[in-house]
Image (cartoon, rainbow, N blue to C red; front, top):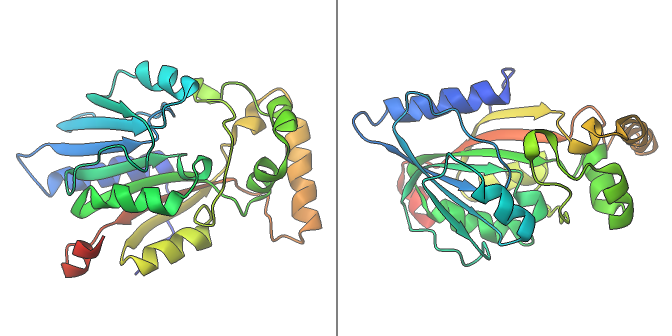
Length: 242
């Protein structure tokens, strides 16, 4: 597995990789699966022929948010451990802020990867459990989280659902996951986008994150809270194992 730490923005990364993927299969549309479509983050598909399928958990807030999207050609809600994902049916898998809010994220991601064609891309955004922000979100009681986190994140994204933050939801955890499954990380970017940092209590949240960084002696950094990665499923024979 190789890694390239990118310095361009996550939106530029996703847009660039999607267009590279489309250019590599001229005359054929891209089949895209959005896992976590309750987070309203449409991909930049201008000039790209694509069919977009969305899946997410069947929760009231997610049902409303996903149902309001105009960029989905198909939508399925339910238990992500059993929602139908046809094998090798997709060229791109978009996973925006899903893994940290579900139980057994490794099992779900394994199922999603089975639906990805060899040579396909995973466009991943997740909150970093090892960051100061992620540490606060997973350790604070729900009553405090609801005071600090806005009901709706920027641009209408789903508000503070219960976080689980499995071991995979960190840079080290994701790289280890990719290594054991023969996946290649091509881009890896840190950013700050936590909803609580843009809410009415943003100054307090920033102060708490700084305190967590200080108390942890830098092991829980406040410099970022988001990890964005592009991961490629290989074309070789090992891809048949996942």
